[in-house]
Image (cartoon, rainbow over the protein chains, first blue to last red):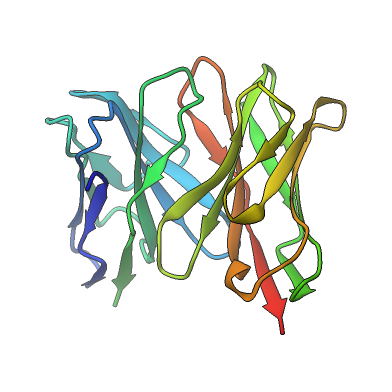
Length: 114
Length: 113
């Protein structure tokens, strides 16, 4: 079945370590997104990419990095520069139409910094 | 930039009662509006969306929402709550001509037996 796969589902990290969250989609969508979810704050956009080899910062990009080398893949690296990385991270994708495409979400990755 | 405000972080209803979750948006151009539902430790699923066709939009699981331009609102309703409706609900807006979707803070719906 088509969909978005995020891994790992749960991840623990020590302070000062970089971690990479995987996001793969087989929906043939051009656009992919990373959101961070914290209780009571909804979803905040970290990065998004509308086409391979191109991506833009969202509202809270500091301390994060991404790459888009393949259409199917949009990994997110949480670097040691991210001051408060404990959160639930959601990857999504959509068709590259003019804003009316719904977002399809993965199951999320919960990162906990020890 | 577009934004969304959801009124009420928690809503509690009895099973069988009306569900009303409020959403107001801000957008400088005609918006596209969405409601998503999230169950614990899962991603978001689309309930319904408004993309400038009928102002009353019907979605899955008996939910519907009405776009009211004069009130800049897109409230979500369901005539009769079911226990399985307990979840967190997010309103979202995106502007035509871009793929930048913005979400509200969410409303947690509790359904009492």
